[in-house]
Image (cartoon, rainbow, N blue to C red):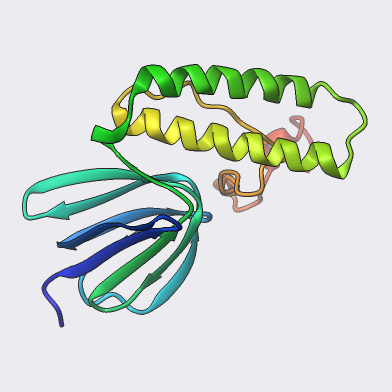
Length: 178
């Protein structure tokens, strides 16, 4: 079993990060997942978010856009649409662009009749909004959370809560009902 994980993040522009790390946490479409040395092989679809990795006692974070990850016993390869580290982010520019994207998105969302073109524009604007929000989160100044119900990779569904008697949803029944 290996003692380290070789982390590699690649974008269309080339290799963005290569490091020998002790552990990694990445954002998948089903929630975050962690990789330690000796991890079983897995392939996961990634959503835009933060990748956290630890080298010794030092923890570092980077932002990645949507993509894919392939983990093995001693390697994690992340193929992402975009990459940013904290030093490369200018929060003033990112906030300005986020304001512009949100204004465009509000305009597109106000359209009652949608077409394939408006749906594609919505998707592109939401992806950009998520990327800008991830950069601000990495910088330490995250925007307020936004829920987009038509987003392809939205948050995972909430677990079903069961009552003590084991019947799901019985809390919604009026008293006296079976």
